[in-house]
Structures are given as C-alpha cells and as structure tokens.
Length: 154
Image (cartoon, rainbow, N blue to C red; front, side, top):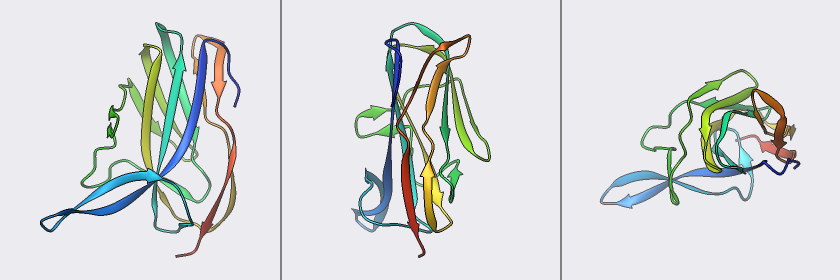
C-alpha cells in the first residue's frame, strides 16, 4: 500500500454468511474472511479511505478479482449499514466488467464503503490494488496492497 500524506486507502475482504435470527427468520452477517472461498460464496469488499478534510472530487477504483462478479443488491441485507454504523455517502457508483468505481463530490477525512461480490470461477488469482485519487489533482492519490485469492470448486 502506498499513499501521500493527504490520502490513504485500505481494503479488506469479508464473508457474507446466512445466520438464524430466531423465530424462524434468517439474516446475513458480515465476518472476517477465513477458511476456503468456494464458488457460489458471497464476499464483501470493504474500502476505508482516510486523509485530509475538505478534499473534493475523489474517485475510488476497486478492481474486481478474477473469478468474481459484483452484486448490486443482496436480498435481506443493507450493505450500507455495518456494525460500526452507516457506510459513507458517495455521489455515484458504477460496476464495470473489471472494477467497481465510487465517486465522491466531498470528502470529510474518513470514509468506509462496501459492496458484495459472488464468487464464480475456481482458480488461483492475483488481486490488483484498489486506488483513490483526487480527480482534478491526480498527484493526490493512494493505493491499497495487492493480494492473492484462491477459489475452490463448490
């Protein structure tokens, strides 16, 4: 991971697990990604951006790992609300073939975003780093660490 003093970015992957909420109801729980990842699992990418207050027009790009597909919505869960509180506001969000992109008109110094992905194709894949930059001052940028992901067949 690298950044400038004005901006830092980190990414973590979490597992979305079905849990029993009692009285016959089922729900979802986001927990640390441990153990094997298998085709059909749903994982969450959580991005944390920290930096100077009052930065305007940030763009956060998160490459989608090969073998995964973004999920717009997951029935019964609001990914904009976490155990720590609400996810931060963004101006626009786009899912492309190879990346998820978030646009922020205003940044107050700390933000957290997350979205879900369905694991599809088994294999061993490299995960490219996520990056954030101030769109009209591209020298103000940061990236997360790269990584690896092994997906097993269901």
